[in-house]
Image 1 (cartoon, each protein chain N blue to C red):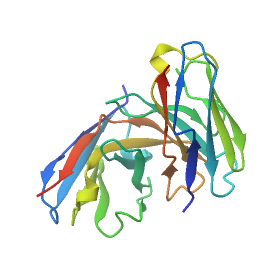
Image 2 (tube, chains in turn blue, red; image 1 turned 90 degrees about the vertical axis):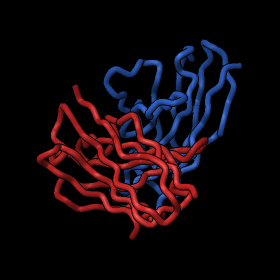
Image 3 (spheres, rainbow over the protein chains, first blue to last red; image 1 turned 90 degrees about the horizontal axis):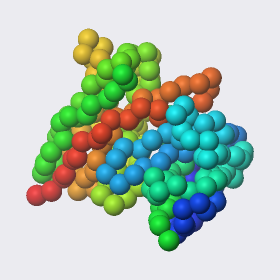
Image 4 (cartoon, chains in turn green, orange; image 1 turned 120 degrees about the vertical axis):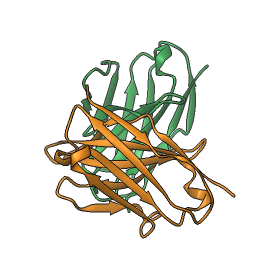
Length: 108
Length: 120
């Protein structure tokens, strides 16, 4: 199975900061990666699909990049509602999807 | 409005069985790939299973042989039959629709989740 790792596992940031989260796959997955946001007690929400495509309704301060094994999710200017946990997910193997362990973004 | 509603969770003893339901509205489940994803308390997301529109099913190694996913087109509902439950199956179980764009899969619609607690 394809393994996904994320760094950092958590970070503290202030409103207005630029935040970058990294995800690494255990093998090349081209651009078959998605990013999700999960607020406490809520279901996950799709932010980015196919590495860099913004899901409809998602603010443009979110962006994704990368291909192969290394990927990033960037929030250009952190807003209060962005404090949440972010997960990457590989979809290269469509019979065994896997998620990264998550990155918790907390208020500094 | 596209919506998923999970039901069927609860407290069950180790070794027991439970069937979760995921009722869809606003789209047809038989035209889509449908997934189950779980989240243990305080932990991350774990993909559990997928039901292809054509009827094929695939499972995570942690549940293979114990869990079975099925679909009732007349009810526009997918199910997760969970047998031989273990303490480590305790989690919130989410149903999610797979939005396929070309060859790219992503889970664009999620239910609110249903809690399963396996404990004696």
